[in-house]
Image (tube, rainbow, N blue to C red; front, side, top):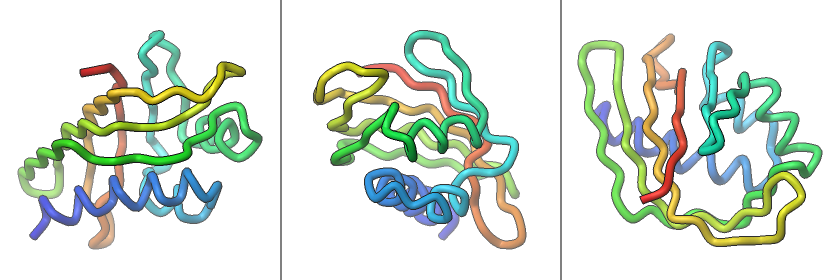
Length: 121
């Protein structure tokens, strides 16, 4: 089921980000991926991954509250509401009620995220 695969990719991304696993993050994020942070800052996939790997952004845990995926052909969306423990941009460790509104595409049989917009819920 495609909707479940999209949800699984979201969870796989966080496992990889927590482990600082570049290959794991690259498997879930398309080369065209961009993240728009709550501040409005926009990052490409490669820049976002670099920030995670060098510790500018540190993820410690992610607990999903509600994951809602929809699919239309080879395109999909995910609204993910999770409790995320993180320390970002030199701030201390905090727990966030993070919502990511994401778009995805199926490429070579694998769902990859192409865009994400972060907010709180």
